Length: 251
Image (tube, rainbow, N blue to C red; front, top):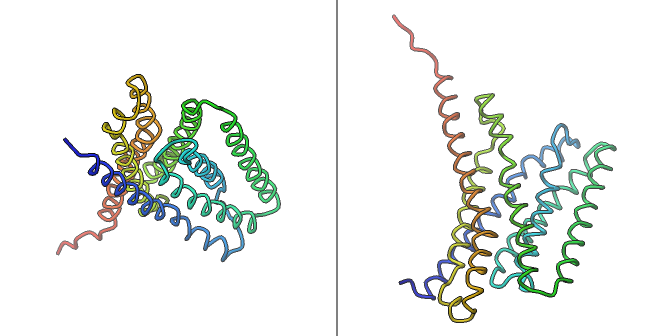
């Protein structure tokens, strides 16, 4: 049987790895925004993914706070860093966008902060800690699943164009590594020694459900989607290489 110390070491290692790989995910849009700054135009780039990612990071960071869930501080740290990156991207987008897009993105940014404020204040008004945990957990789970599902449209483009030009490799790789790390973090966060020792038997099943649903399930889905993206990348990358080879000259 694995000792409590081993569980804790594995959990911390997975959490730290998740933070590192998440940083790679957060910096992956930098080349896009270099182009936006250089051209002083957002061209056909959409700002919606960054608006959505900001809301997701804020909710997940709130979920990891001690007064919402216990022993999930790494979830807060990684998503706090992510929120800073996403806010920076949005501000650059607003600065370089045309007038109509400036107003649209500014309004959406204000809406994100209003929604988060309602969620944060509303959750603190819930006195039952389990209900508060459940409420924010479901919200963070839903936003995580939706965020990881967002590359599906890009995967559709890859299949139709038979090209990986619009699916950057490092973005797909970072998504896979981050999701897998936090999947393991959620698994190792279940410490049967702590649960049995400190919680009544009636609450053990509820606590296990929290860990499985709110951390393991969305990151499990992210891992599957990451594997799918990498498989598509290597398949069409190799296929394009084969098709671009010059035919042999027959004497």
